[in-house]
Length: 255
Picture (cartoon, rainbow, N blue to C red):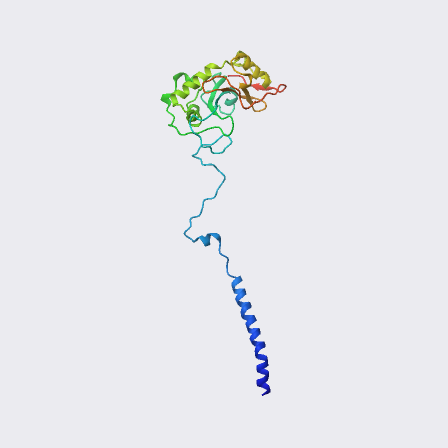
């Protein structure tokens, strides 16, 4: 009887210990199961998204700030006529057709610009056709590759056809007088950015003084830029450019 009594009194203890071990084993088994990833949760048939590298659509239009813009032809506020100092360009592009001919200023481009926000670029339009450019355009825009680039990047946003756009480029170039002392110098010219701007303003009294800007790399002239309305009247530029009065920049000789 004493054995049976001891078993009866001990059975609840054994049962309790067994329950504790069983529960502990289930908990450990549950915790050691591998967790499901988010991709597993979506199912193996879900496609893997390509890694984003922070790049805009290479086929889409871009602003000069590198952002893609929803550019529409003809939607801009003014033109920026870029007159590039060819000798500076030719220091790094010696094989270009414009180099080695004593050329001074050439037309880099006529760019549709916005008063605020990104400037329109790479608008929808027909591909460049060399047969639609004026024959004498090569005199001041001396490269077919330059013309092709300027049409596809900027001309398509003008709202004009290719022939009309380059006729407008031709007219814009004819409206700007290059000061005689920097037209085609065969020697190096050193001048302050402000004085160079004043030289252009004096030679072009129909243009507002703040409608001409100087672009340089701090030491050498790169471009003179002129702001024009859509009908090619002088207008104010939204950027002042380099107007340092006491600094000196250099115009490399035209050779």
